Amino acid sequence: MDKFELQIGGKSFLGRLALTDAGAEFASRMPLKLTMKEHNGNEKYCYTGREFPGAPQKPNRLSAGELWAFSGDCLVLFYEDHANDGYEYVYLGRLDDATGLADALGTGDVEVSFV
Image (spheres, helix red, strand yellow):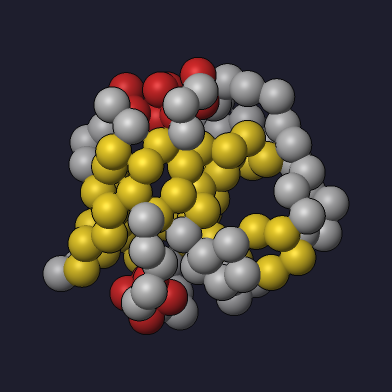
């Protein structure tokens, strides 16, 4: 399975998972309901307690709608484009269209579902 849906309140966003072991691992956890915490005004994150496989990379830029794993088991959803400050991530996938994502996520912690 490479397609997924992100649900936030009454909003839905469609996306595709990476065709990698990390993407497959994420797919195996769905459906998944999480409370994601706010960080830096550009991302939401949640420690999942289970590591994602794959070699970390240092992307130069991070884009709204991208899903990455940080530090093994931390799921990160970026909602604003920005330069990476040298952090390493394992790529999990991305939303097809991130229009309205920042508004849907809001400014604080938020409950999301991946299905």
